[in-house]
Length: 126
Image 1: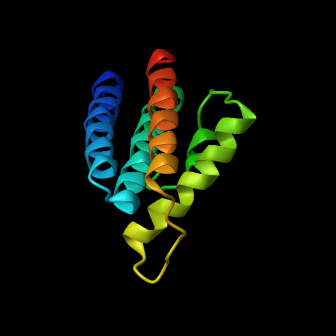
Image 2: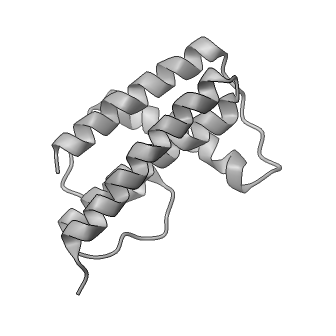
């Protein structure tokens, strides 16, 4: 049996650290790396909810929609579309031959702000 509280704390604290990293990277025009971390923030926060819902260690998956389906969360359609956008940027960090279109800094900052908003909402739901 896992310690649910400890697991949730792990995923959320790790996610909070990653949002700071995403912000620094985007600020320093490391857009693709920053968006990779935006994805990571939401992945980890959703994994906290998987633990909460299932009382088990979350699957070793990076697919935000798949992970979300393992929770009791209901998200807005616009946020689900955003998850699809972020999914493009997590691949580049894992598969070097995948080259997504890199948005400009303003768009990346918009994605960062959206990530922060969703992360805040995910924390509030715990």
